Length: 428
Ligand code: CAO
Image 1 (cartoon, rainbow, N blue to C red):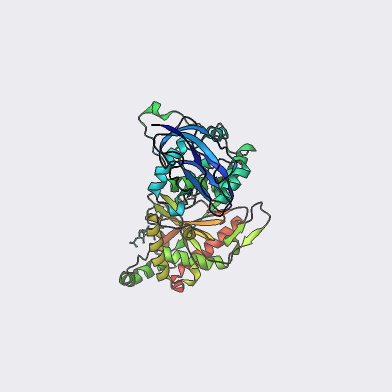
Image 2 (cartoon, rainbow, N blue to C red):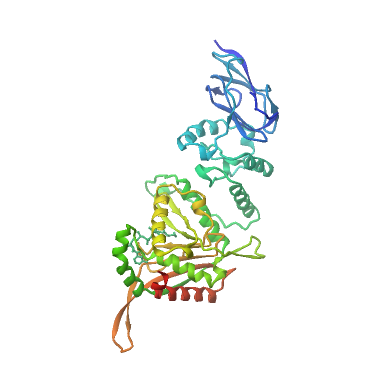
């Protein structure tokens, strides 16, 4: 038999009060036992308040921003079995993305999103509907910042582990909106109804692809890219690689041109500090970076990832070959940590194992340059005696931030790099 019960705020431990940051139910809704009805945030943590029993919500007694304390009534509900005095579950820390399995996150997301309160929905700008079926994973500081900025976190894409929203994601979201508001955003491209022209299928993009797309777009529209193409004579490199193949086999590493490229770039960057610098936001100063951490673009089934090899100058070709293999495998298995992908001063994107003659890689900010590498090709040249001979060439495509680097500097860099690659034994 149904009886009216009250859901009271259980003990908050050693904290007196907490703020209501999300109300996840409204009057008239059915409640499941254990369903999260509200998120409250104290100085110490964000907590989920679960329903102690199944029933129907009769009235919600709290609103966003309320300060509540132990014993305050959150809602009245008609409980089919238990009364309010029945064992009330303690509030649970809100899911921390790093601690939560993806399946669990998915289970929680649907009910939470379906139960967003009307007041919250009202905060959504008309053109920016909240992402349905999406739970918000963010720490207290980020939630507080979002409230101060008036941002509904359901609209923000988290780039942390398991989509946890970081402060930087929030800042980026605000920057994107400001760019739109000031009219500097690009005109929208029309998106017609494609199904009119034949069968279509909507394929949702994974998180990695979405984040990569957002970052690539931001880089492309914010940084004036120029690409300098050059060719490095690679006969000596290929001869050396061939010579070292038995040793590579013995060591069980794949000795592609990449470790040589990494080491050669690190050496070239020593003499070109501009290419390992960063431009301060606002463009008033350059940050000189005296480290040689180099990112490596890796093509994975989920999208493009850029793990970073640390201190490339201090590592030999064999260490670099091994590390390339390890990081590429980790990227493809979805095992990279945020640390694995941060701190780079320069990036290499190699399509040499696939094909093509040249391309325009996109800069990975805050870096100011990225080297694209294409497949080696042979050309006929005349030697000193006037005879024709084959020459093996490695195509290099350096995209650079033209606010920081001018064309002459870029051409000098690729020339210098080609020179280093032309004498690969010095890299051993
Ligand atoms: N010219 C000729 N052959 C090349 C070459 C080049 N520039 N670069 C690599 N190769 C050869 C390798 O030597 C290897 O052959 P062998 O086994 O006979 O030596 C073969 O191509 C395959 O190499 P690979 O691609 O597996 O290995 P890699 O070290 O060159 O690259 C990695 C590793 C992780 C960078 C690569 O697998 C990858 O993901 N590339 C794609 C990166 C990407 O998508 N960039 C685009 C970003 S912009 O959208």
